[in-house]
Length: 330
Image 1 (cartoon, rainbow, N blue to C red):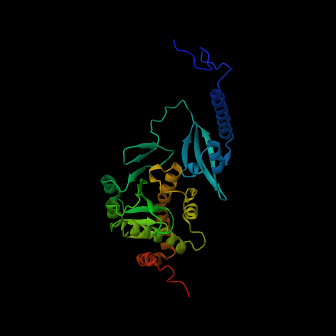
Image 2: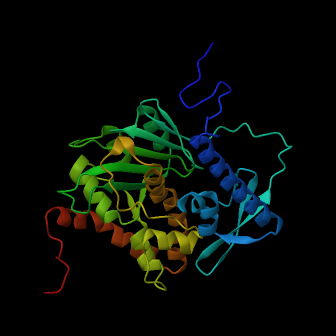
Image 3: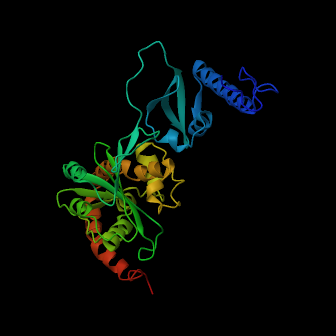
């Protein structure tokens, strides 16, 4: 016979009534029921809500809403992006018929090179690698004609602040995150890929990324396209050329940049918001390259951008040699 625990009778009841843990669980369940009822009312009334309001309803960070695409599911509801009003994206909930056959689709996972899998709330494929791309991943990315590339560092002083991550994305949306070790000076597979003459590497503010890849890993990236340079020459109607503004203007997507200033050095224990941020920095670059190229050709400014891009290697050489004010007056 199992003896009752201290404070619990033979039927498992807390001697003073229900256990404190049960009270906490019940409070959480009651709060959940209220949330689900609100969601049902929103769906029944066909109300439109903002990204922030939807994130609050779901009890998630806003990035979990804005980066998931046009349509997706949450619990018993289909979530659809309806339109934009001013600077707000509006969403609508629709109740799902739960009598239908449930989907057999597996939850999205971040696959690590060491064989571990981490379930995350992602709607795109992502694979992580330690120190360099695997041979299989190298072969995969070598088939692309364009690749989006970005880096994450401990700061903006290249000799002082080490390189922590290199992110890649191909035209099909496959994302790779390569974790760079402290003191690491080479990544042969990354170098072979980023120096391949047939593949256009697309950056946002290429000047910094080219310099940090050269300084820390000895990689001379080419050929290159920079969406920041292209934006400044194509989008003369706007003074805002940051990635967030560019994605919002040309693609109508709000991306979250709150993890930008965070500790990237602990590469083996990155948070979900950091991984999503790192992925978002490359996921939209190829669509931006396509739209900016169309604009530049329409406005007959494409050759000017090509000329500006051809100067990047010399500018990077000057930056790394410490000549940062060569073109300044005085």
